[in-house]
Image (cartoon, rainbow, N blue to C red; front, side, top):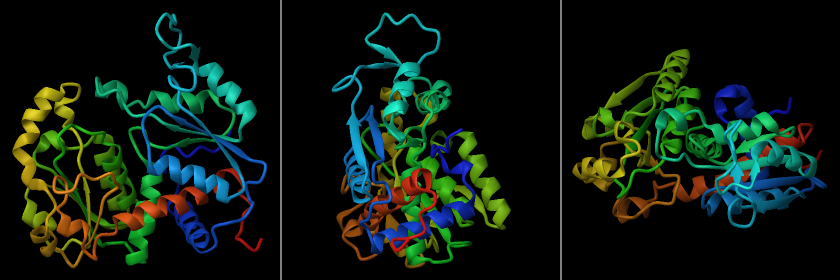
Length: 340
């Protein structure tokens, strides 16, 4: 069976540490041909800027070829439900799509957001799991209900400023946005920060904005394994107090999942969760980051985004390096460095 990169839960901390070390090597020495004669299909069911750019360039910088496909636009629409009568808009089934692509390319990367109708169905992550089930080459998650590629970039950024992140206070704070967004980055931020033993605090307005129980329990289990703490707070000032790293993200309330109008009425009360200089002043001279894109003066103020402590651009750049390292792990596992 091929090794996939669908989430970081399936990877040990040591394996991720090794991957991040390779990413640092690649940051300093970006160009060589470890993926010469290799190709990767990049399948986008949702829009992208950083993900598409960093994957296309990264594959090229490693000597490989990227093939970009947008089902329903420049490729046939895909049906993912098993044993279904295909009388809708989809022209072919995932069984054939994954099987055929596996004969053409060396890996398949997929970006597919949830449908935002039924969380109990969306949390099963059927699209990426279907690719993994029917493909005979590695499958890479470019964001579904988790965003493991963003996790790698986040941890590379954290380790650049805190080489030993264990027991550093990591604050994941909810922020306002005019519409309910995917919980993927928030799920992933909990997962990776706790996996590396940070003291993790989740700050959100009310219990409505707690994340799926799986990721909450995962964070607690990871923290317990390191002797670290995991806490939930609805108090802004105490949550920011003495934080070493502040990570902001907006997401929709799972209690109103599939009902954006009701969720909108709920979130209107919490625009004060914006990250500003006062809140950052409560921290232990913390670094601030966000996965981007970010609406300025909605999620974070200009003063925060323009401050020296903001490392969001660094994190975005690290997407390129960490994804290249991950691709090498999957497609060129004998890679030992640019001089190999």
